Length: 271
Image (cartoon, rainbow, N blue to C red; front, side):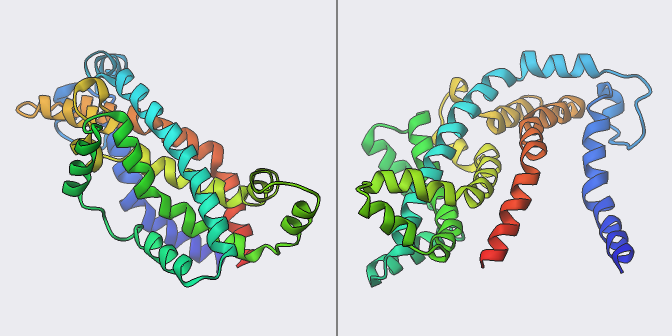
């Protein structure tokens, strides 16, 4: 039965995952003429160094990478801390007001926010087009993910440890930092991986909320790079930029896959 299952999964993955990925990789190694054919064969002439050097030099890859890191890292950390604190309040509270705000916040995962009111608010605050305003929007729109994941964990934990720490004189911030955060580590790790992928690949908000090439993240630099060569689209360079853009996410996945699986397994057991 296991052999049949893995065989069916492999047959499904080959046309939908393996072939598109191979198409991007192999054509990023070809010169422009060969890559325009969008074939799956190996290059007749290899142009790896030439293609990737061109992307780094003319595609503003390093600038986009720096901007993406400067936005993604603080956004993910802020969402994890704020989401864990909110999940603690939702998990321990039983008022109707808390329940209502929890469901509203959870619905933000499914309902896309409106861009026009967002731009209007940022203009009123003087943050329109700035990385800080963009980061605030990402924090607000992604907070529901961590709250939804962590609230169930908090409800599954008995409050005995928190009560004992309070009796010993620990303050609420100390209880949160020393007891709750270590207990929530598995689910926060899963949430962090989801957030990194979500924030790193964000294009919609970045297109409207970031102004100027100096503030462009990697998805925006890829879009600008491809749009700048629209009349003579060079697929080899576009595919090379795509691979360089996704390379940090691949590194995160390779590093975090065991921890993510462990967190999901623990969450399933607690559920």
